[in-house]
Image 1 (cartoon, rainbow, N blue to C red):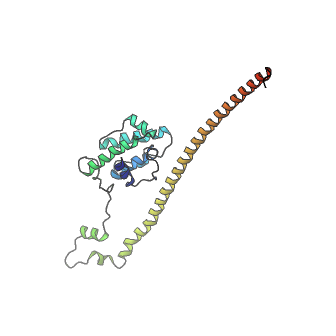
Image 2: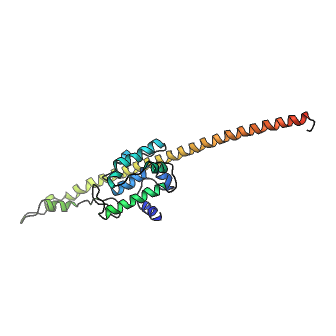
Length: 231
């Protein structure tokens, strides 16, 4: 199991991992791991963080129907029920199966849509340099100026300015995603606390009822004792 835990720790996820059984119960982080290695198979907008059993079941059933069958396995309903209940060892079993499928795809033993996953996670596209594109698309001829010379003295600025404008937009988007995840995490924590408060309130009511019953019995016994002149 330690190899599975290490593998999960090395995979970038949107939420911090505190308790693996509870963290993976709604299926979102499992979908993120699949998306990390097989990005063409997973549409993350189909999966939302959930506290209700109905939404958790929807997430896992969607994973089964749209994603997992394409990499050669399905999670049984009994296992899904155990995962949703955060049963001990339930999520570790399906994570191990997924890890084996990823390794098989990396070794070329499993055919899946899209490029083969790399050892470091999902495939990363390499951005071509502007000079390489120009040279490849338009070979230089004898006596002609090089692409950089034809572009003029402001060619460097024309390439850099869109990148510079894109960076703040990307940072803003990343900040929004982080804020959203933090909000979801806080809402989940609040929901769990409210559930605990509800349980404790019911227990207090039952204890109060037991105390009233005991008090009533004590009063009845005292009355009997006084009637017989014992007290």
